[in-house]
Length: 244
Image 1 (tube, one colour):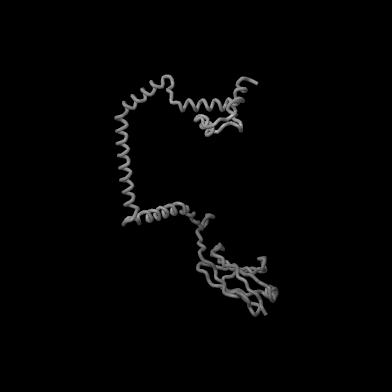
Image 2 (cartoon, helix red, strand yellow):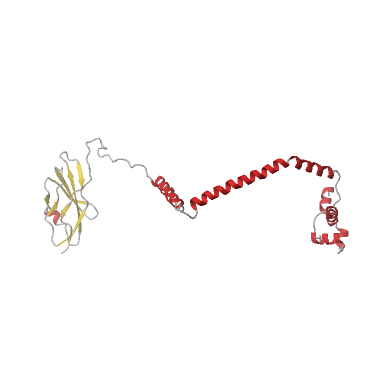
């Protein structure tokens, strides 16, 4: 084992080592302890405590004390002015605190803070919730003249539960329509029959009427076309049921 390790082991604290209170009692001479005779660590601790309590000046300690004293004397003016500066800063802080107290404390201006908070929340909400401008819809995206589909064809009959197999389909006119495309479908949207008509009604052929059975749901839809057979508007899908 090296000398350093031996020394470290000799001065390592053990469970039997004395506490500071026990060392102080030994210093006063009111107690004795057999552990002290065999423990270098406790002997060193006691010697250091005696040296601290003795008050004997260390070599050159007087010179150090004299230098500190003279340095403080030279800085006395700055120390005093610093104290004045601290008092000035304190007064400024007190004035500022008084101003804030008048503004937001008890008094006529206590409403300023809530109003300011509400205004700040409103501004933040406007910034965060403002969505970019929606893209403009272009009806002539295909390069053809614009066709605006803001309405729809309204279907008249048959609608809902009916007591007899219908003989015709009826709908309302749509401005600008030259003809109407009519489609009759099964409930799964498979097509049963289709026809184009310039009237606001069309007869249902017997072959189609034969497929309209009791309790069977039938769908139909009408699309308005212009003079060049371009789609203007389309109705919603309507349904009817033959209910005997």
